[in-house]
Image 1: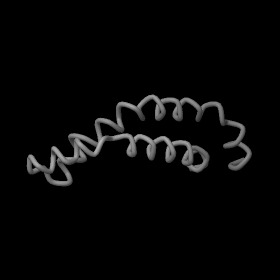
Image 2: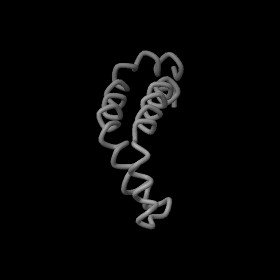
Image 3: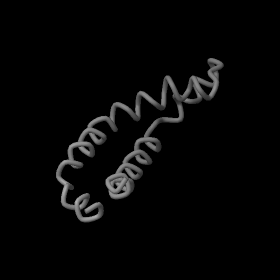
Image 4: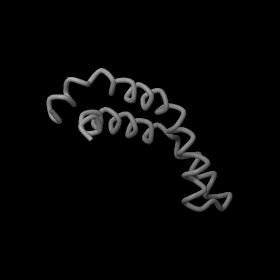
Length: 76
């Protein structure tokens, strides 16, 4: 829980930047093709987020091992 609290701002800012960089043309084309909200998320948003955020999520996971002192301090 502590690592989630410490890493949340970094992940939030990164994900916000990714979402803002997705071109609206893709969503407009999906709308014209008749895609619903779930199809837009599954076929446009999620693959673009995953491609950029996967290395970040892996690095956050590995940084958990470096924060043993923080966990030990708070949990005893």
